[in-house]
Length: 208
Image 1 (cartoon, rainbow, N blue to C red):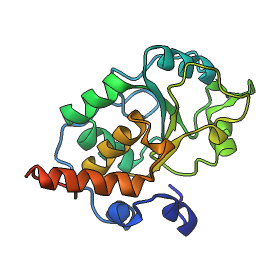
Image 2 (image 1 turned 90 degrees about the vertical axis):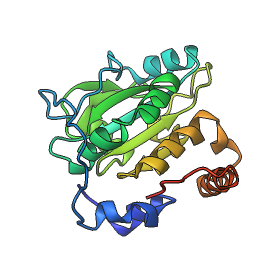
Image 3 (image 1 turned 180 degrees about the horizontal axis):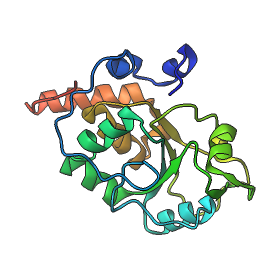
Image 4 (image 1 turned 135 degrees about the horizontal axis):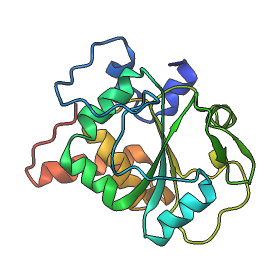
């Protein structure tokens, strides 16, 4: 996985995820997610796709869901943590299943994918085209039923999560997109509002 200062600072919560990038050991004791033949961790609810991103997003929108792409790679310890910790939590898994159609792509994969502008290329070349340099990266698209302009997908995304985020922040970013808060509110403000609301309700907050 490649990480540089620019990519690190692209996350609005660099400090919150720093532990995942600074060489610390992963602490997951959860059950291991199933590995596919491609070496990627699998979830049964990830969509089966003909890998035409225009069609995948439209199908999600028609179902009232957002479309998200999970970029991963073989041997990625942070991808394993995302699957074995975050996605093993029912409240996170169910929220995503109910509100998002998720497609998994391999940043070094050979499968042909059709971008939103109609250009077909391998997963590897698409990752390069979009500037996806390390994993996991999650790219989000709108749930509007109208067709998007014929542009590369990286110019059409509404939000992107870069790197491994702990469960609280991970779920919050899906809530942020699901409620279309990205249209009017920065993520950091949305997160702070959520924390203050939970505190006011007297709920325990497991931020880290």
